[in-house]
Length: 347
Image (tube, rainbow, N blue to C red; front, side, top):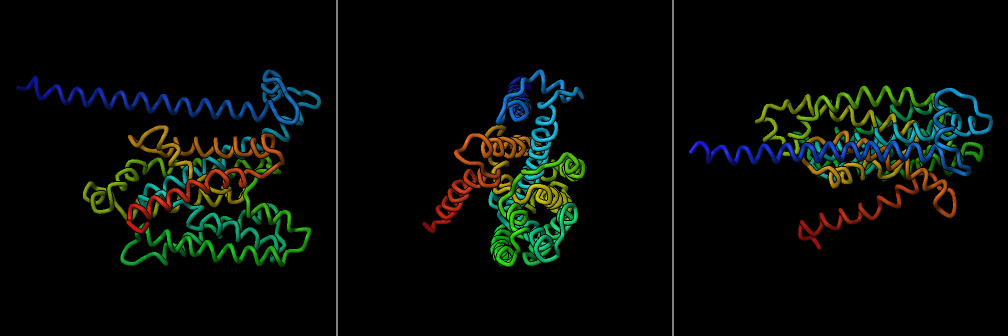
C-alpha cells in the first residue's frame, strides 16, 4: 500500500524537477538572446564594426573612428535600452500579478502618462532641462499612482475599479500634455515630444547609474516579495489565509513597481506597451510555474533593445522606439478588451 501511495508523489516530484529544468533553460535562452541583441546593436548599424574590435574597445583600447561610434553612440543606447526595458517589464508584471488582470499595467492605467506629463510641464512651463526634468517626472509618476490608488479605495482596492480610474486619469493627463505642447515654443517642442512617444535618442552613460540603482533597489524589493506576489494570484482572502500580510505586501509592491516605471520614464519617456507586453510574453515562454519577475525583466529589455534597433535601421524611416512598441502592443490591447467583453457576455 505504501508503495502505491509513493508512486504519485514520486511522479509529482519528477514533474516539478522537469518544469524547473525547463524554466532554467528558457531563462538561459532569454539571457543569451539578450546578450546577442546587445552585441548586434554594438557591431551593426550604419557601419559594421567587427565583434573583436568591439570587445577591444569595451576593454579600453583606443580605435580611431570605431571607438567613438561604439563607446559614445552605440553603447549608451544599448545600456539604457536594457535598463529601461527591465524596469518597465518588472513594474508591469508586478501590477498585473497583484491585480490579477493583464490590463493592469502602468502604461495602461496612467502612471507612465503621469510621469510624461510632469516632464512636459517641467520643460514647457518651468523651462527646466536635464536631471531636473527627470526628477519632476519621477515625482509626477509617484503622485499619479498615489492619486489612482486613493480614488480606487472603497474598503479596499479592486483591479477593475483601479484600471477604469487609471484609464480615465490617463486620458485627462494626455489632454493636459497636448495643451502644453500647443503652448510650447519651437525650441522646446522637440525635447517635449520625446516625453510623449518614448525614445532612447541621445542616451548618455551617466544616466545609467541612477537607473541601475533603482533597478537593483526596487527590483530587489519585488524579488524579495516574489513568493507573496505569486500567492496574491489566488486572491486576497486565500493569500491572507496562507499567511501573506496583505497591506505590507501590496504597499511594497506598488511603491517598488511605480518607482521602477517612474525612473525608466524619467530617462526614456513612456515607451509604449513594454510594461504591458513583457509579462504575457514571458508567461507564454516560461509558463506560470514560478515567478515571472526575472523573465519579464529580460523580455522588457529585449523589447526596448530590438525595438530601438528596428526603429533605427530596419524600417523605411527612422522612428523612436516608442512608435515601434506601440505598433506591437496596440493590437494585443484590442484583443484583450474583446476577449474580456466576450467572457462577460457583452459581445
